[in-house]
Amino acid sequence: MRTHDRLPLAVSIGALALIAITYVVNAMDRLVFPTLLAHVDAEYGFSLAAGGFLATIFTLGLGIGGIPGAYLFVHRSRKFVAISGIVIYSACTILTCFSFGFYDMALYRAISGVGEAFQNAAIFTMAGAYFSQNRTFAFGVLNLAYALGSFIGPRWGGHLLSDSGSWRLPLVIYGLLGFGGAALLQVLVSRKFSEESVQDDYSKGTSEAHIPNRLINRNTVLVTLASAGGGLAAYGYLGLYPTFLRNELNFSVEAAGAAASMYGAGACTGIVCGYIADRVNQKWLTIGTLVALNAAGYAIFNLATTPQSQSVLSFIEGAAFSGFLFVNNYSLMQRSVRSPIIGRASGLMLAAINLPAAFSGYMMAKLVTAFGWSTAALLQMSLLLIIPTIGMFFFDPAQTSRVTGKD
Image 1 (tube, rainbow, N blue to C red):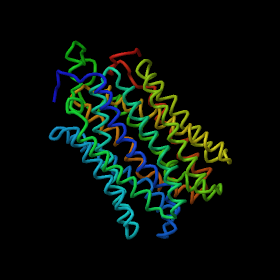
Image 2: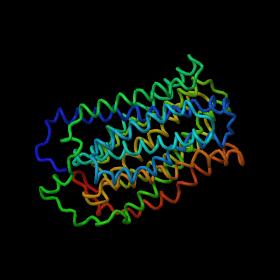
Image 3: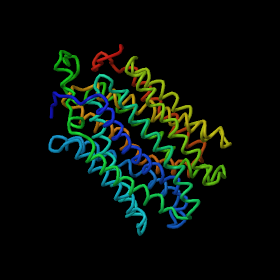
Image 4: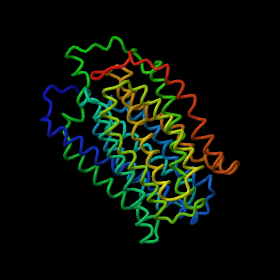
């Protein structure tokens, strides 16, 4: 759908804020489960590897659901895809509470990821199309919402668990909040915002002849590699970090939840990344954040032992991966293709981050079992990132759609 009568600025900003609020709940759903994992493992008798698998298997759904979710835009509106996604993951979050065992819980977690993928691809395509001249900044706003949810989810979930003694209560509350967000999106977000075409901006004279006319090209392959490496490292941390704090460093459930929530605080830097990335050579941001992610991942599991130092490093981890790598690479992926296929580029980005990440918790747990936390972190969170870091040196900014800034 192409709209020629754009909304007043205040209305379009309000629409962006509303879809961002629904993304807060998405992040709360996503990040609370690792905080509850020790209690889930104890009740069901799951091993460390099984728990790690459950903590990150939702990313399999995210990876699988991203590309078909993007292709749904051909037949359905972005608004429909976003609402469908919210309903799917909210229902599965509540169903997790009624699991009989490992297999049905894994199924609910994986399907919840499919719902998250639908919402993610839809709202990032909405924001990228409507605010195409300031795309990365718009993504930074959405990532700020994700950051707030990442901060609130583990912390509030830890308090609810501590006060009630039930790991199910946070999941029920978060699921109900998701249904409420879907209703608000349906009623309050105009199709003039959700279905805007990025082509409107290019029809004013900006050529795309310098951008490869295909989804798979050198730049998208390099961004995929960098995103996959970052996802394996970061989700290995996300899936087992509270377990590491509880079992290895003997933190209380509230102290572990507080440290884990600092990841969300770090992700708030996404809006800073958005401002910077629209003005500089984005490939160097990706290279720098991969280096920072490498250092932070190693230090978390090898050097820091106090709640204060863990909170600082958790903040850095969130800033490096969610604040900078995710926001910058999402923008780079869309800017590396022509405007008619940015929806598919969104799906490819979700697959790149999340398909490898789906097994990151299991992989990390097996490495921990075999070598201990220290060596496992060195292998998965440091050495793993060397190849994608080198690969990004071959990224060609001249084959991207930079409407502002310079490369």
